[in-house]
Length: 406
Image (tube, rainbow, N blue to C red; front, side, top):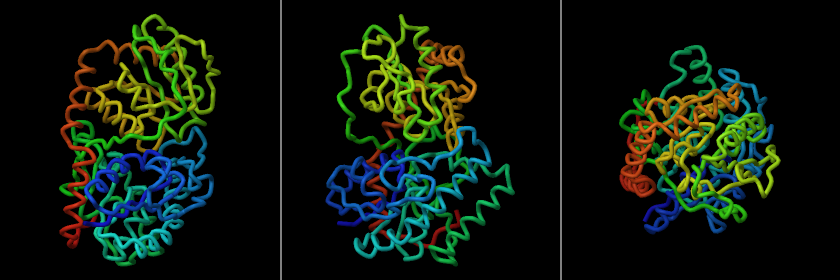
């Protein structure tokens, strides 16, 4: 049997897809360990998960290393190149530098046959390359495949220089790989039916579809409040956008209330901005909600176009209203529109009328529901965690030859 070290950033959406893969590998008799934040990983993967601590304190500005699983705090209005610069300079690069010593210690103690490194846990790839260990990329979003920086050569050059400097500090100075794209294997937790044509990754990409696994449930959910006679709409902005989402959640709640006879909304409201009442028949708002369980019943979802939420909704054939905020979310939102499975609205400007109109479209337009069902079928055929485990077994068994530049 083989040993696999999973290297993850302190971000919920980047740990969750590997939870199912880890479980599948363990069920096949392999040894599995994690390198990352022990509090977060054990919360998501279970209390018995073997975790080698690294980046315990995380990058400055609250990078989430202490178990919160959140992005660094950014001004709500930050967008475009400015947001990209913030992400790399204030989160990804400091995180990689903080994680690198722990990853090296984990490799020495666990002696893996292969490393699985999340695209945002750059230390995993750079350390594996330096030590000559076969490694795979865990791509929890397909946005990187679109090569969004291609139209911006100066920004792309800045990004390349940043990665080169990082490699000199924590990896192999003469290395050639892009740490976001293993030259051996890239596990993409999506399919071309959603992602569309790709410009990066090529034949290294294994489209395994979403990896969904049982996860810890929040406090008891009031299932008795749900009205089976109305269309259930799940509204969530993910785990990292609570501070920026108050206005949007309020407008979405107004849109739901305007359709109270036909629609009921369940809102993930971690900051309590909606002032929810337990006797409210139209809006059920809680700090945390059982997302996968709700999606089994939902008729539509309104979200920030986070890749995991989008894929979880489409796995269940649930059409989407997407309101991207930053980072990869505009790319994922474009994918949702491109495959016909949803409608996009502007996060910063959409009011109740626009959100409501988008809801009416995804709830009432048969072609959108059919597109969501088509993506769902492709996801389920891709194999999920079992297919990912197949690819990783092959990587560990055959090792890795010289790869190409990413």
